[in-house]
Image 1 (spheres, rainbow, N blue to C red):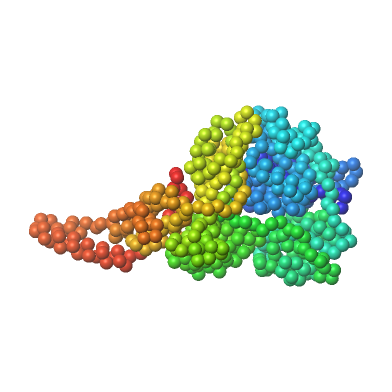
Image 2 (cartoon, helix red, strand yellow):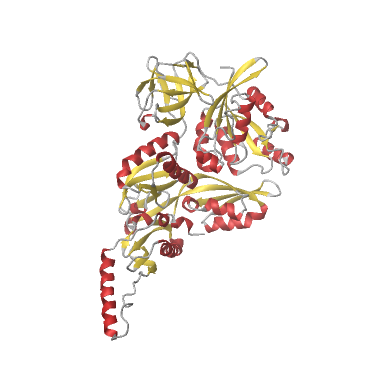
Length: 598
């Protein structure tokens, strides 16, 4: 155990985590020249295309120092705020963390957020200034920022360049010297914490775990404590570049188990594996349950693909424990699922993974958040509203509460005005403003979560020319005046386009929705009335005129009554068509609300 080191890499998005992981693999000769490629641990096509890490990846390396061989388990983590749950799971399996800060950009919002996560778990922090080879690097000033943030000495900060490999041997030595060895009882009953899992179509579910106490042997009968189910450990091993089977995994080490489990719901991230012969009394205190922030409906385009979509979502949930879903129905779209996500990027990634990995074509409804409502008849009882269709009758309602978040925005002093305008326009309240340096400002806002769900992050990046960084955490529910805006086509409400909106913004958004739908819905042979309403009151209307065939073209000369007769006949036909005709709504219309501020 004294020669095992478990550590993760934490940083803001695009500060060089994955590149540094590549250099550590090179330095420990864990990868051959033939297997070598950039961002080796980002093995999803999506990760490579977008240049972001979506999944945390565990990999084992070996390093010799002073004649002793050390086993190093590296867990590479994502940097984007939407994948912070991945980071919290990785941190639970580690004793140390590399805190990477870009020497040109400095400390960003997500750096601080992930650092606090690591400090809560008492991890040993090794600060690293990366990208020191850039012409715009400013190691002195950014070194001061790190010292202010974590209170370390200047000589504790390592200088590195992941691109050139400079400083990587010093990082490996620091991991061995500074990161504590794992603690645990090698002779105690087996307790192993599952912190990740994924689905292999040929071998079933592979669970990745860290042994906290005891050891696990191949062929041993094991029990998963939260479900109580028992399995044989058909194969156990460690994750090198490829899986490497072993006979035994001891205390403090990280490995995988394959036991032929086919049902996704039998494996839960945060569960404890124990031995059937000598079981542990209780499970390991895992990490907290995920709290989804954004909810949206996902529906199959073909109704008969409902069960296929369910199994695809279950397999995705194995790989991404922050996805939650439950079945729901919609009058417009049929059977589907109500899914919970951590943010808009997370939602986009899940939708794309469904299409790429499972060949599922899906329709996603407008995202929203969950609200609390209290009825006059029983003011103590909370009624959860996760969908506009659950909205109670306003005459029966005592009050409504919506989730608020504390937003942390770090930006250049030049952009403070536009950033404040954006946040105040989104019903934000400024709570704090701190100058980190003469040119960098940290702004704290209390804001409704519903306002940042759609396009807040994109607009923040646009107005700050890409410089502002953003992080948030929930701070509870506050009372708010919300109304349900319904969209109707020819008098028929389209439940998938309904939205819960603050009363002050309802008229503007209703008007914009009608205009947007007028652009997106193809013209039919009959006139379409597009209306937005609150209850029985119509607040906006647009009319999509009918496509008209020129029925009088064949009449040349002659009496006007002949033409009028043809036009009256056409008018009667259109009226009948309007009563019977259905309006096809394109997928782009369901996402129209997201782009209302463009």
